[in-house]
Image (cartoon, rainbow, N blue to C red; front, side):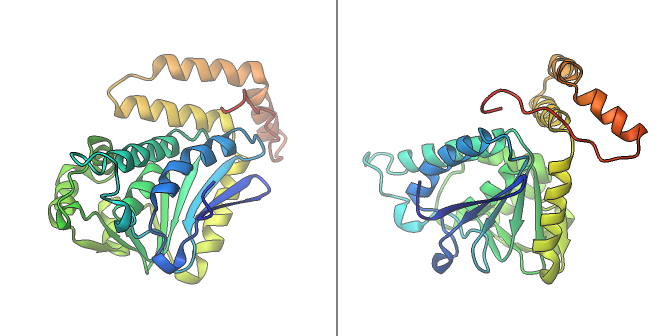
Length: 263
């Protein structure tokens, strides 16, 4: 694993930290390449019920490290290797089977927005700055990255961001739907930690079903078969029975499901 990706687990919550604060956590080629493996290992740890993705220091991620952009072996497409690793990292984060929350301070630019958009939810404070800047350097964003942005903010704001490369402050990002909450700076860490603990206490089966069904609906499917399969799992696993018994008994549920490896 890259030295610049740090994982800490506290109870049922894992924190994945982009750890290059001197470079505002810009993603190197090695970081993109290593991220799917890190996420696979975390997915296989059934003690982990929620994942927080954040950056060390005052910034979340300033994007891809410019030094790696044109370092590929093919002179006709020098970004090919980096693009493949970037897309694989985004896909792995989107596919992570438990809820994911991006905790964003400061700069969240380019690849930083890609990572944040690949999470299920995004929390920031008033220092948050969000920009997608391919037009500043002549990069054409791949459709998967455009799609993630489109699903969050719609076509007009996607075009505004990609056409202009302009940076949105936290209030504007909240207004257009790029982030889900803006908290005071001195409350962001604790607020996200509390929310992650809430997520970790809920039904993992319900959450997994929601992630898959929402993904299918966004892609144009109906989600019916997926929802039915996960509903049967809630019954056979005892998760539904425990949830109902806990509600009736006015106690916190102790959901039993852990699932198959990597799920």
